[in-house]
Length: 279
Image 1 (cartoon, rainbow, N blue to C red):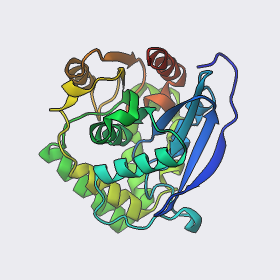
Image 2: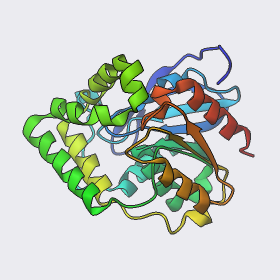
Image 3: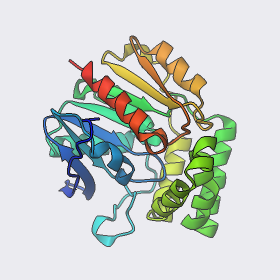
Image 4: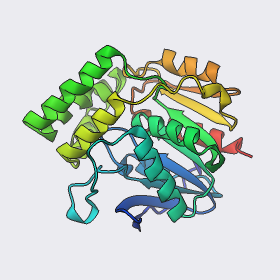
């Protein structure tokens, strides 16, 4: 995005009624809200924030609890969180940063939150970019996997979660050609607390199926998926494209579940094309 021109990325804190939210911001103009994957943070979007297209202001908040090891940013109220709770958080954040009607980009867990946000407050959404995510609820096997990860987090800590999860977050090409990215991701996961990982895991485990209302989405929607994503395979994105009127599907070669980090140039081009069609 934006050619070779790099934009300054600023770290800020939004002091909301219930808590403080750390977020990253760049650019100026119409708002683009970036919602990160589990179990990362807003830092995931640095490569996109540096290349926000002219005329757009990108804001990337930490979802509640994430990157919350610092007392200054520690979020209360993690017990019993739902995906709708995260969506309400984002709506409050959007109001605070004067992003009243935004394009929302969510990847993985961020995509679950983006869909919940669009369902709850469609008038606040100017467009959607749904990356490496799915509208459906977890399968019984998926729910069991969430429980197993929660058990690992509680018994062995965040480091064990990173060792188990990080290799699955990227594709085969990335594991072969960008092994350093796995080290970066391991460090990013370890910035989170056990409490945040447990809360988000249980929220995702119990999230509702959002497939039925997809045909009612009435804003420009782009779906992005890494061709080597095994956590939310391409078939999930293809089904979502068929269900959302007028949706576009962008396939990212050589990328797995974290396509924005594995193939940033292709991902940035997908964002730029998606924003170009938002009226």
